[in-house]
Image (cartoon, rainbow over all chains, first blue to last red; front, side):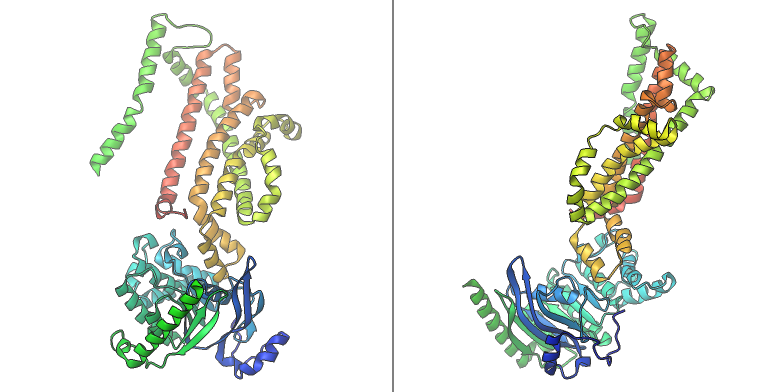
Length: 284
Length: 261
């Protein structure tokens, strides 16, 4: 329904978008665009004048102290929160609610999976939502489970799986949507270090082969550098962009050598300084 | 495994000790002449009356009538309670709008509807089913409403993000997530349905086990009356047993996996 050919010109745009159009000379390459977005909830401004473009295929990581609106920004793209002012555009068109081309990996995998469905049936949910005929599902489900390394656990229920497996399962369900944009809200925050590293590498490989854009919220600054093409640093009260960091590290990335590169260490220092300052400002 | 099975058999058998002792003591009291009268009968007489009623078909016919109205009413009330509960649990505004009418209708004793139901439907199955349905709807409505309202919000967001339609959301997310709790309400409703069914038969409707008790009483057959009474208890016990068995078969896993806290 939302798969508009990339070349199609947006049918109708609010006046404000047309004015700002110079910033997006080639809208076909822009997957997600925030255009002067404010979010107010209960009289409190959560996000203030957010303008940000995410290119097709770009891996954007978002860091910032709590209360900086990281998750709210993600929920705007997911269609779970509406802007109080401004527009969020997907492929040049204002978002109306959620889109099946945008998938969300929630942090609390155990709550986001259906406990009464097996792994295969959980993946099937996304295919059912796409109205895919029942006889076409099993092959796809097997492929998707294999992609996240769960091929031997198709019949298991989420409660019988480890945290890492459950999060892999949620990722498989998101991939079943064939998303153009993957939203991830601290997806590995609750996992142990080893599992986290292997999932980081798996997600990089999945993103590389699918060409999806990623909006990745994290607390872990090194994770942001390791994964991202660009890092957006948010400040709080109200949430707004404080700094942007370009990550010029070669791909494919490697858990050991990438993390040893001078560029990685330089970014790490910059990000830590930024976060320290943002936390300090928040405390005032 | 087999030791555990043995233990559960012994446990279940131990539940029969008290009834058996009561039967023996009752029988002895009658034989010794301590007990007699028009309202009581010796266990052996009750058993003979039960066999007689079983053989002449009156017991089974009455049981059939009561079961039709009990399960008919349970189905009717269960469906209404389920549908209303899903709607009220999903839409807080509708819930507030209907809160007062519902709280006024709920305390009405279902038997108080007998006069109206008789005017509308006369005697027979349909008026009794309507009254049983009224009584059975409440527990299902209440448990469904709270079960739906307390579903993990993340699951609703998953449905929204996947753009499941509202019918698919109800059948793929809301109902499966709340079914274990709804079934508890359904079991409560089943017990109530049997009680109301027999009550309506005693009060007005000339069918079923309730009516059979009245007839036995009026024709001065205490043994038959008490046989019917014990039989109703056995029927209720069996119904609950079947429902608990179904609950464990259907929701054993879902109950274990834990619907949201």
